Amino acid sequence: MIGIQSPVRLDENNEPESDISILKYRADFYSQAHPGPLDLLAIIEAADSSLRHDRQVKLLLYAYYGVPEYWIIDIATKQITVHLAPVGKGFQVNRISELETRLYC
Image 1 (cartoon, rainbow, N blue to C red):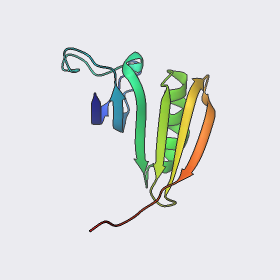
Image 2: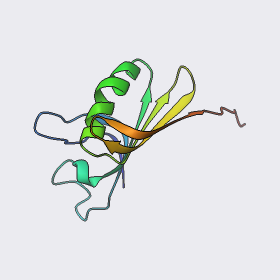
Image 3: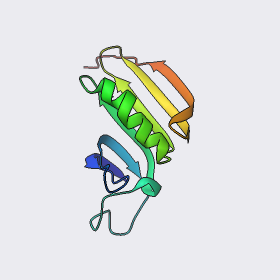
Image 4: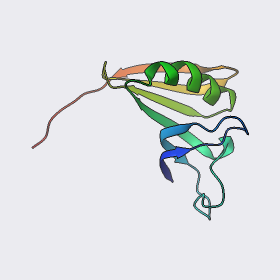
């Protein structure tokens, strides 16, 4: 399942809205409650003005709560940073890739 700009309930004080969340299937399609950390497969943020917040605040939260994958798409530099294998307040694997942009008509 895919959530678009939907809140994710990490705990009673933290409910960030991610640009895209990839969720495990749930029969109620999350109509009864927001997804929590155990429901998440990956979070994707497309960042421009929010880049600093996404890299500093959200990254720590998602790692701490065990989100398996956290992607940050930096619009200005056209880079994707993929964070994998959360541990403590960070991720064990961090990969940066260049975005290829092409215009198709």
